[in-house]
Amino acid sequence: TNFICIYECKVALSSSSSSKTQSSLGRTMTSLITSSLQALKLSSPFAHGSTPLSSLSKPNSFPNPKMPALVPVIRAMKTMQGRVVCATNDKTVAVEVVRLAPHPKYKRRVRMKKKYQAHDPDNQFKVGDVVLLEKSRPISKTKSFVALPVVARKSGGDGLLGIPLESQQPAAA
Image 1 (cartoon, rainbow, N blue to C red):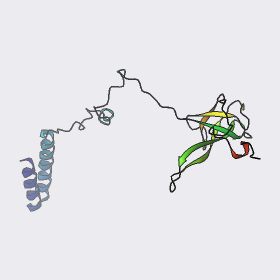
Image 2: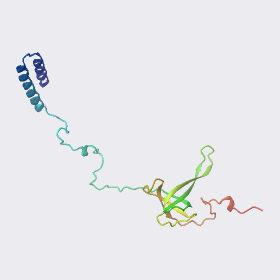
Image 3: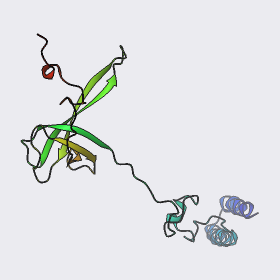
Image 4: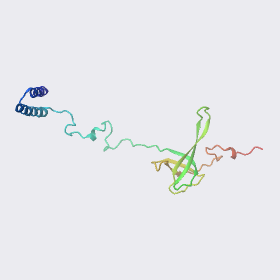
């Protein structure tokens, strides 16, 4: 009904010819518009800032951060073992990790090597040392592991995976 009144005021304003009539109709139209807007109830919770946006951005299904969680969060640490191949940089060692993986075409297990840069804060590791790489926050562009000492296992062969290398096998006479 309010919109019909506004439409009628516009029609009356355009059809009247005198300027006094137009100004009085303009005032009445303005008063009608303001009264109709005041009478109009907005159902949105955002109308007068009654609902903060921070509470609406998070769904209600998540637990309350003030309440302690019943189950503690377990973070799995990624660790790898490898051999230091370069220790010339300050506080950084290059560690070569060897793993056995099936060949994509022939399905035979082959040695896959990959080098990682690891953080060595005390410069304690030398070339040939066996170290444990533990995942950490990114320290630099290429370093996201920390090198930790590992006691080398006493195994029959000194190969990288416990498999003796060809050069270390006894020569057949």
